[in-house]
Length: 385
Ligand SMILES: Cc1cc2nc3c(=O)[nH]c(=O)nc-3n(C[C@H](O)[C@H](O)[C@H](O)COP(=O)(O)OP(=O)(O)OC[C@H]3O[C@@H](n4cnc5c(N)ncnc54)[C@H](O)[C@@H]3O)c2cc1C
Image 1: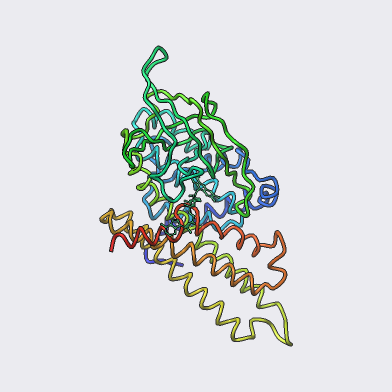
Image 2: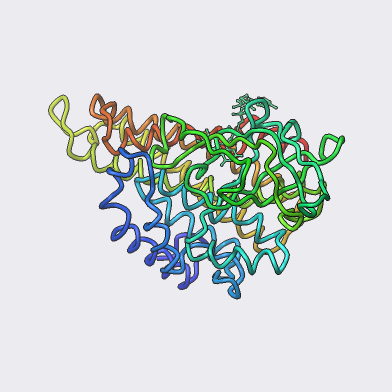
């Protein structure tokens, strides 16, 4: 059944393919990955073999050449999984880190790394946030200085990063570093795992997304060849802002899919749970509360598709950025409202570790923080009125 005005039969096939992959390769293992705090590389390799890593990247490098709408269908279908840790591991690779190579890489850089990215052999991470600069990207202090000596032409990176998703798992990091004195003089560098001077810290312990690894990175005299500069020198700030658009649509897709999941679980629960001589569903206040949460979720979903459609149409970037910022703020807040309300209707059971609604509620929290906190998103939108 067509659920958005933008749906096509190809989208439905993609949704079914992703659902089959999740049922076969993810859901049976999701609890173990959550306990172990990791996603095995094999699972990502199998996703690559199924053609599901990088459907928006160029076909000549193993990608699917899909537009922003189809890419959203993929993200939303993937986010139907209860394993948000797995979902974010993949979406960072396909929608947050990978786009840096896709958008700014030269033919030689893409030929070198992209086939591994789409096959799931080369896992990627994007390293922007630092201990003293998160929302304020232009405040980063990690530096890269150009060197040209006996060892050749290159860059030496010094500084540290924090909260880097796939930090432990990744083979290739796209690292933002300051390359000039101006506030926006930032460049992006491709740094391979094992490069001398790059030290990967421990995986940080988190409230949610527990299967996903989030790590600190330390750069001490970390030297990369000159051809590891991604895009133009000094244009990294703009690249980060551009790639945030794909990232924020993917995070909004996670939020909307989580709302849907929470509402469906709650409908099932209140129809059978009895109190005061009848089911919870028999109580008007309960029915109306769920219906309102569903109304907001359905509206947010249409806005999500509208934003991806505008991106696919190539509408004026200025106003699309405003839409995507509003979308990120709206869905980041909504998923917290919905999971909180749905957890409430599960009573004490909803507070028990490991119940599906408790997982959704815990995993939802970061969606109002990561990839642009709600306040920052609202300011980005407000600047454009
Ligand atoms: C699980 C997880 C995974 C992450 N993955 C990555 C990753 O892969 N790569 C990466 O580079 N980063 C990553 N991040 C970092 C994430 O993007 C930042 O945490 C986020 O941008 C907020 O930055 P901050 O934590 O430094 O908060 P701060 O910038 O210190 O802000 C704290 C709070 O202050 C408020 N605030 C900030 N600015 C304003 C403002 N202008 N007006 C009003 N209120 C404001 C907001 O409520 C915000 O939450 C991740 C974070 C988490 C938690």
